[in-house]
Length: 407
Image (cartoon, rainbow, N blue to C red; front, side, top):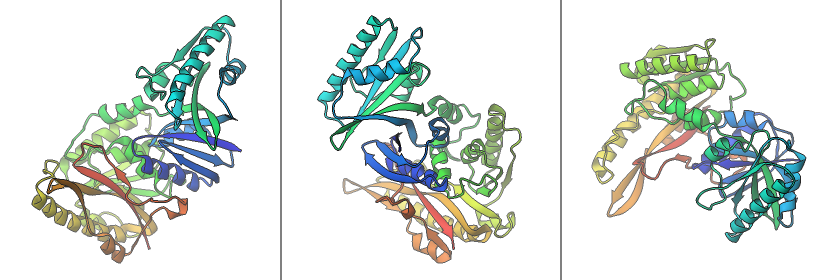
């Protein structure tokens, strides 16, 4: 049996749904799944290519494969793994991640690491024991990459404990944080008004679709902003992409950013159809039943709203409810049967009587009346898949992802 561990980023629920939906649509059978703090362990029916998969997923930081289960931990376990899988005349780099094990274990594993380094030296191996500077046994992706822990003669172990057994994984793939940063901050046009969607979130939204196996579907982003969703679609290999926005500057930004992505990543065979149009008139530009998938973040309202100004927030919500509902009416016309919408709704943080509350758009029932089913990912057999929030602590407007299917 093949057992893998997925180290999750800050938005745990979204990342778990992304992983499970990805495997579901690739017909990879999950025999068992275990959720713990920041990690997901999957027992699946076949081998997977961790490096390929981590390049597809947006919310996974690291992926590792189970090496062994042990009743106790000692240096010999790791030494045997290292010695049996390394080249003697090449430097060995090794380190540990510890998840969900009582605090004193951190001191124990550090002692084990130092003992391994000493033993390797006596055996004639040049090695480096990589540790986190703040004494926490969780290595960042930056540390992993800069210390060559997943390259030849590199060993990054992840240890967790379940049912009185220590599970020892070897990390095989890490998220390319430099490439994400390059795409986010290196693109020629970044406009906070037209949208600052993180590329990781865009990729997660794409992977929430049930069309991920079909790269030839017709996809539309009708609020394309700076073109971030379009860029991630291109990088994932989709071919028939359409983008629109009501703003001249957004269209121009998207064109420049998409051209930049195509040039930087050698995607000259890809083409995107970009046009200016109000979403309320999108059905004038796109034929009925033509689109299979809509992925988008609409306008969420002014970014400078104060959380104490409840009146302005409520006024903004009423405007957005009208915008969203009119959009969904047009989406229904241009979407194919069983076509999908993966869309961001705003959730507004408000300060009321010195208490923080949250206000949402109240339009789900009206969207269903238009002719849509809300997909809550029940097929993935996980609890609490509702409230798919993507947020940071300092955000005044949170992003909530919804998925709808045309009946």
